[in-house]
Length: 206
Image 1 (cartoon, rainbow, N blue to C red):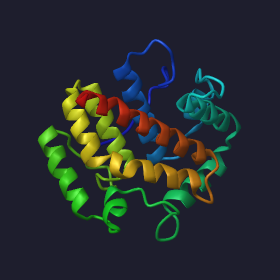
Image 2 (image 1 turned 90 degrees about the vertical axis):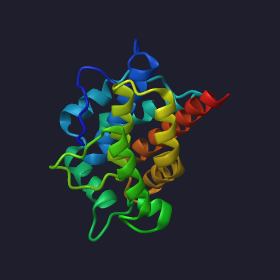
Image 3 (image 1 turned 90 degrees about the horizontal axis):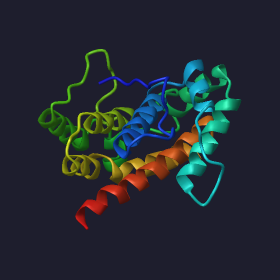
Image 4 (image 1 turned 135 degrees about the vertical axis):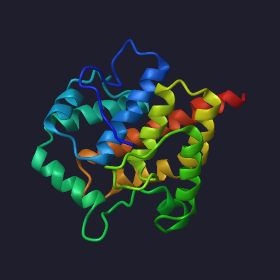
């Protein structure tokens, strides 16, 4: 699996249908959690047509990310990313499903995820060194399902089995991490988006 983000369109732009909005937001989150943003991505984010802060928490999160992207410095972002997610031994946040669900890396949640990815026909690319339960990889998998027009029942099952139980907690930890500055906004956006996804997919049962 690998991630990419279009520099021509952003998840917050108007004119997208719901599926494109969701897929682009997952892809953006995956990109930001895989590597620190480069100058091109920061420029893109600084141009997002985000609403000013309102009672809409998601719109407020987009606005905050836009402001942070406008003020960010690349060298500082690289240091922040390394401290948050890599560190000496590990970073301030350990962004893996197995860790959040069992307290161990490479544990049963990863095995279940790998089994389901095989069933879904999603293959890990050889150049990717992170295990499939890394937060960036999981977000990207959901984007792939949406982009490939997987039915909503399949999306709902993947989200419930491999995402919602731990993603909100992980994004909250990113937002609250001592070294988070730019990534505080990423964590906030992730929390709000995942909660919105939960409500959207839960509506399928009503």
